[in-house]
Image (cartoon, rainbow, N blue to C red; front, top):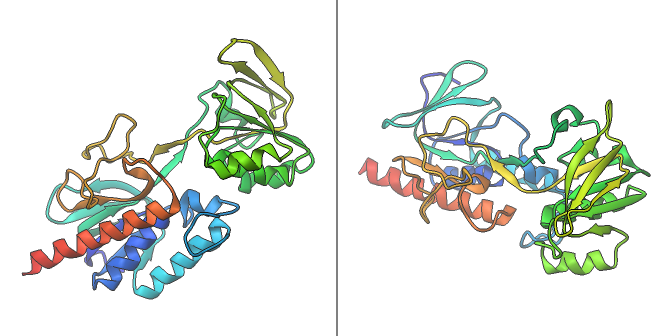
Length: 308
C-alpha cells in the first residue's frame, strides 16, 4: 500500500461498528481502509454466546465477527493491521499515524475504536491481572475449571460471564452493588434457577494474594460489613472505558464518550464516531452495527456533495 494513497475514508477499529461501516462504505463506492491494532471484533469477539442479534438465534462472538470481517473484505475494504497512535483530523485531508511507521490519509475518518473493560481500581489489580484477576471469562474461564470464581457486575455481560463460568467452575459467586440486576429480565429469570450464588448490595474492596489471587474482601454497601470469599479468580464486568486516547479534539461527555449527532457526526468536520466509543444509551452488537451503517451512509452523502 503506497503512502501516497488517499482513501475516501479510514475506519479506525474492526469491531462490529467498524466492519459494518466498511461494508456500507464499500457498497457505496468509497475507497476504504480499515485499521485495527488488536483483535478483530473487539470485545464482541470474546462473547461466549450472542443470543440477541436479530436473525441469529445463538452464536459465539468470534464466529459472528469473523463473518462480518469476511463480508467486509469481500466488499473491497483494505485492512491494515496496525495500531493508530496519532490523529491529525483538523484539515480537509485527515491523517492517521501508525505504530509500525508511516501514515494513512483520507478525506473522511470513522472512529470505531470501541471501549475497554473498566477496572476495579484496587491495589494489586494490575499485578494480579492474569493471576486471578480477569476481564474476559471466555478467554480465561477454562483455566479455572473445577475451581471457585467470582464475577463482579450486574449487567448483561456479567450475567453472560457467570452462566458461561457455571459450566466450568465448581462454584460461582455474582457480586453486585445493588439488590437487583441491571441485566435483561431473561437473565434474571435464568439466575434464579441456576447454581450461581448472588452476593447482593456488595462490592469488591480488596484483592489478596502474592503470586496469585487467593481471596477477595467484599463490603456490603448497606451494612458496611466486610466478608471474605476464597476464590481462585474474580472476573471483572463492571462496565467500560472509551478508547479515546489521542482524540482530545473531539467533544466528549462526562464519562469520556464521544458526542455525535444522529448522523454520527462529531464536532470535527469530516470525522464520525460509531459503536461503543460513542455517547448513547445502549451498547450492544446490534446498535454498534447500526451506528456503523449510519456513519458510512452519512460519509457517502458527504462525499457525493463534495464531488458535485
